[in-house]
Length: 404
Image (cartoon, rainbow, N blue to C red; front, side, top):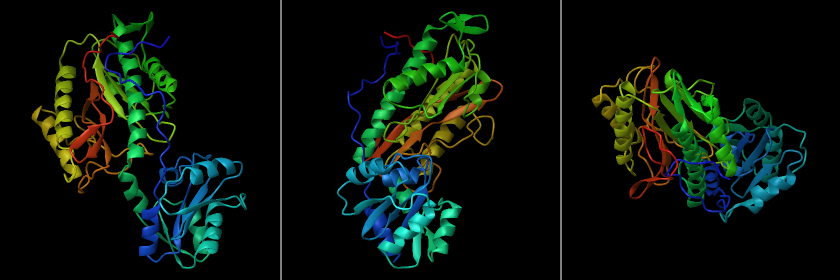
């Protein structure tokens, strides 16, 4: 029997979307424009650029992707040859770039293997790399006679999601909503008992809530990735609280759920609740943040400067009497960031650049007081030709709603 969920959780299609491929033609074009020998990225499965370029969910050992004007190579780590072939070659889109997996010299450092691939494929001196290339890989390229130069082409490409990427993001965000619905159902069923809330006869803690959320995510094939942030009262003012705290009646309970789906894409959803609240700071903060959230959403559209969205949210919170110039009290962070194969990627909603169709960003205003608590409301939206599309919807409620 499935656990109870609060009303408003989205229904899920039976199958997860097909894995997206990555169009490597922007990388090829950047190489050609700079008259470079190629492009090299080195990292492991935790590197967002490598996951995006290769779609290879390999081990926590370094490997490389090498792109030239003619082809793309993945230097597979030992014991992962077949998986690399399946994900990098067989799953590739029709972008005109020939792909291959190289399995030779798997005991050599990834930078050495990348240089060897360049030697075979292309002549030239300049090699384009992300700014985050490991230091040892850059040295190996230099020792082989290449001159690394950084490029933002991968980061720029990652900011504009394709329809296949959006399908994965919609799915993981819908599952994220169901995790939130489980937490809300638990809070709604908790009974005040002095300074505690009792759930199934035991004092409710942030860790118990976290386990309930993560179990619901896992039921649908999504991993918490250690990103289920839950704080209560003063710990709700900690932006990334993952510790254990008791949940008391009347205080804010902040849940920021950011899991990772099977194709590497993240969801991101935050809601704040209070059980048996008598109003006060908690209610006033919630009303202010809810209005700032809606105001920010209204300003998300192609062509609008990203930083404008932050400024509009900040202005709304200021109008409600909350500070925006403090590191600890009031609105203490940006109103949003990009999300994709990394939980935090471009664009930043403090940047002085226009939003583009295909950007996927969070909208997450919040206010905090370390002595009282915190309130944050967050949704994940895509920039479309018509404004902002919430990738999944979930109700905004101050008092948690019981399952129907």
